[in-house]
Image (cartoon, rainbow, N blue to C red):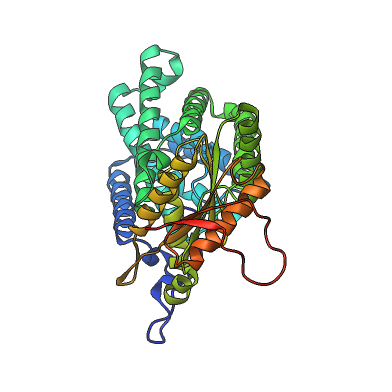
Length: 437
């Protein structure tokens, strides 16, 4: 799911827009329909399995103990906070045992208390995100629980050490992970249709975390099945793992712009400096682009800052989708983006800039009954041709961007020469060659 944003829809006919009070209504229609459908299916599943389940004291006690362990983990890591957007934790270490050891209705109910605790004690976000997360986790856990119970039958078999029940548990845990990831990925893609599927599905880091969660969840399930008291021994290592995981995510979040998901200015500069040093050492070419959204203030003034944020996110997603994995892209502030293209010469830099201009020009963001479209201007600078360090390249690309705007916007420009940034008042000199659309 995407990072929380501020709702800023302008009143119509003197009445405050519903999206101000109900943020879900400000999302894409397809996303609203999908979220409501998943929550409705989850509620129907809870009702169905609640009616068909015989509640036993031992099951209730096991469920309560596992939820208490999850609550202790949340409280122990609460001071670290939680990064906005889709964050990872090890709460599956408590949800998976519920799915494997107890009837399916408990798997459907288990995310609810922990999501409420996260909302109240860690980070408050819009309610529909918590509700959807609970539904997605519950449905994934219910599916894993139904499969495990139908194949294994005797739940105590997991604690005997037999190979078949453990292999089935591994398969069910994998099913839980796949379904949960898929449900959330569909929502993330519906929120940002221009994003690539591989950005919202697995990458190498997420796959490693999924394997860790799977292993920890099965070990806790076996421990819990042997003796509930052994959870006291399982709790400290899970807490330590979760604390380490959240700490790493918070470090990554400190490098990221919250509205676009790109590197922030400071992190981009560090990455760019590293690439420039490498290019100097190897003698390879390198290009720098500064991309600016034309007349972005008009978007905010006409449609509100919520739509403006969606435009920023859409432009960022389009830029990222058109670049290579090792290109360095960040938000430089406001409506400006910076792109570093290692091993790119003049021809490649022009081609990439023109492709970005063309793709962003075809992008449309829905706003009420309208579709918001924007264009971009871009300034391009080449290492050794327009500068030898990051400051010189930024100054050259900035001059080229200024020239592109002076010539009517919706175009790209390259500097004709290396000239220092003007320090006094007055217009900047025309030092760029335009690339007309």
